[in-house]
Length: 131
Image (cartoon, rainbow, N blue to C red; front, side):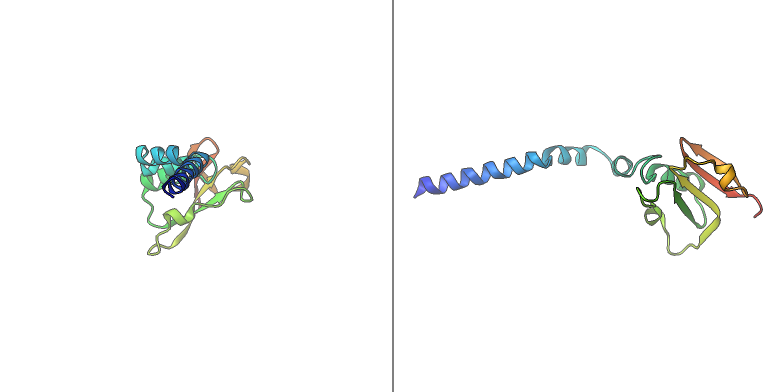
C-alpha cells in the first residue's frame, strides 16, 4: 500500500515538473523577480514597435500633458492602441496632439496641419499648427 502511494506521489511530482518546464515556469519566475515593471511592460508591448508602450510612456513623462492624447497605430490590424494604459478619466481628449506608433507612411503628407515634435524610429509626437 505504501509503495502505491509513493508511486502516485512520484508520478505527481514528475508531472508537475514536466508542466513547469514545458511552460517556462522557472524562467518566467526569474524574469518576473529580476526585471522591474517598466522593463517588463516595454518587453511585452514594445518601445517603438508593437503597441508602442515605451514611446508613449516617454511622451507622457516628458511633456506631462494636461489632456489625454490620442494614439494612432500604423498597423491597426496587428496591434491595438495603448491609450488605456495612460487614460485619465478626469482629463478630456485633446485633438491638438497625436502619438503615431509604427507609422511608416509620410507623416507630413497625411497630417498636413501638424508639425513633428518628437521622433524615434517610426514613432512620432505631432502637434496641430493652427491651434
